[in-house]
Length: 397
Image (cartoon, rainbow, N blue to C red; front, side, top):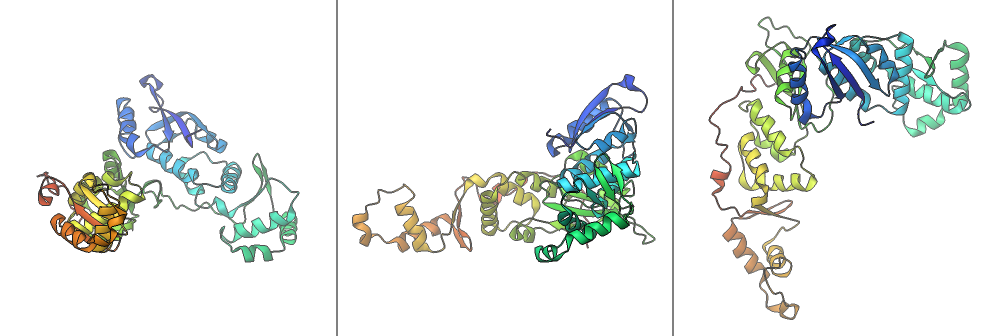
């Protein structure tokens, strides 16, 4: 099973409109297509719960309670992302507590993902030592050093739990609540921050209030599809970036790239396109882009995007830091010359390396040597070519 949740969605009670089967989490590159499919059946237009779950399939059998309920497409997507990161123990805790609480509402299921880890679920009573230690781990929020874990008298803790606490039998084991409360972390509209997949930049956003009131923020994760951006704004209570204040919540871009951005003037479109251009980069590509940024000194997200899309027009040699090292590399390893080791004493590596670096306008940086070999001037390469100005981020704090 490649999905966490698969749901057959229909419009309200009117199944004659047709149905759409959606697998969650929705990959970023399929999100807009999924929303358009729902639109064709007059669903998924807003952040309201306008889709009825006609059928649901998941390894989380407790979610069967969602059948025939009304949901929003993003609620199912967020829930699937949360559950997709769960360990087997967390899966048991979620399933057992959902059964114990008789949950049938999507909002409650989402909130349960934030607190089910406090419960203890026993599926095998044969190892009291492990039961007791795992129970203490649950009481400690799931975090404990191995030294602390080994010091626990697991048998005594297990017997105290079984004899003195009320357990509830579920299809997923005997569950002990440990005082767990279903806190309203998710208010039914704005999703709590949750970093999933290949997020490069995350922004917190909320409407600008003339009275200074602060409502729960919504979060936008870049790169994002057009519909994701639109619906994030709607959940925040706005229709454009001019209506919100925003701030960087998370930035995992390389430092040199972050330093080149001017967030007070960047548009969300440019930032998003920059992140899209690098979303499939591996470590080697990121290192090369960092080097190219240090060479070219871009001043905007659109210029960085242009560089990312034209990396093949740059040469980058990691760990080459001096003209002599560069000359030696070119003469011995590049294949451009018929290197003869018998003439080693006659090669002027430093002289050749210096001359070549000067001709190429190359640069030695901390990570190596970088140079541009394209046929158009760098200034022209880095031009975006777009004359339209998008919404400014504005209100950054």
